Length: 296
Image (cartoon, rainbow, N blue to C red; front, side, top):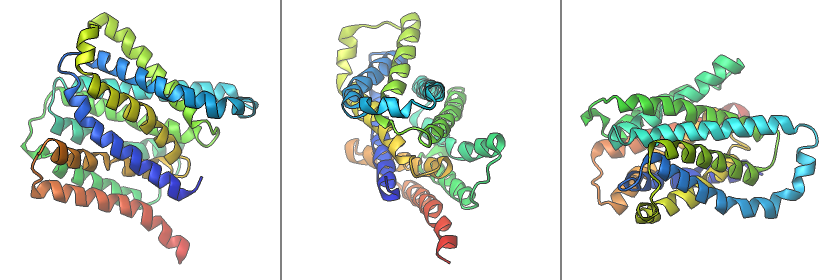
């Protein structure tokens, strides 16, 4: 797979994530966050599973010949990270507003290179750090956070950002060893659906009629975001290391803003446009600056 295909996969999955933010917010009018995630990710699992059987079952023997244990461990860690990140984000939306949640979620952008540096002792290209700063400034301007009030629920979003970071890092590890993106996508969505269902049974009510009331939001968030977008992320990280990938994924905020303007008629202010500009600059710097040394 070429670098161009990986970049296109990253952009497409980020676009889907950004537009899904609206579905995540409106999809909890009648149901709880764990019910929403359980149904959403189970639908995503059902969407991916047939494709995994169709295209990857024949590859299992060769892919698992050397080390199945590592695949199983990393798959579980990826699924667990996705569950914790998505659960904390979804619950936080009950206790904080969208502006705060969107801003604090992109804290995974600096967390990824910091975690890699601390635990893997791996050097990070210098271009990552100015790109991270630009993305954080852009996120601040994009979400109108300067007009928001910091709430207790924001701590849930920040903790969730930590698990979004580990999800990106573990995905970066597994794609270097195995070429089973559809299988991994099915496994991680099933793990999220299972854990969400178990917790939802304890703290929430699964009422079929109420779930049907949110079916449009659930289907979009389930099939496109919970299913195919996370598979696209795996394809993207085949040729993009975790730190630059996290920077590209911060475009989620840009696409969310555009979607809110287009679908909800929200007005784009000067700060919003500047935020988009800063994030775009951060993404471009992260991709172009490493090429300078190669071409000189």
